[in-house]
Amino acid sequence: MRTPSLRAHKIAGLSAAPVAVLVAGVLVWQGSTAAFTATTRNPGNSWATGQVALTDDDNGRAGFNVENLVPGATGEKCIVVTSNSTVAGEVRAYTQNLSGSAAGLEDHIDLRVERGTGGSFDTCDGFAPVPGALPAQSLSTLAQANRDYATGGAVWDTTGTPGESTTYRGTWTFDTAGMTQSQIDALQGSRVSVDLVWELQSDDAAAPAS
Image (cartoon, rainbow, N blue to C red):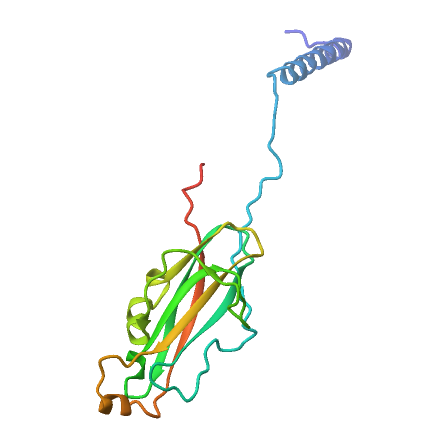
């Protein structure tokens, strides 16, 4: 068999080059026109929590600091509670940290808490209650019946507008009705204390849509 000449090798090499370029060009063209595309986007999605904040106008002072009680004594005090929350919620009032002497004065100090408008920590002048307040109950009863948020009362529904406020009025009485003189005398020198708490919790929300 005859061996191809050097000239034939050169011709074959030159003729193969255009074919390779042509094939490569066809592949590039096919790749660039393989599909149509389009996109759309919804940018800037984010999530941020609201906040709840509650203050009052007592300036760190106790609402009631009464000394030298005598049977039948009574008094009142108002406090303005302000919500600076950005979400709607519900405020409830309750008692905590009841403590006193063994004489049982907590059974004979009756307290009624009403919610309304007007008045301030310095004076209850102008206070106007809203209907529905519970009757006065002894501190010992309140410590059991209104001891946390779940059992709290004097409900105030907030809208989530910072700066909204309401006024609470507490009215107390040293009630000795039905007691004997010796029972009343046994309360001399007694002392009782309790914390009045207002707590705000944000409203529950339905499960968010996916």
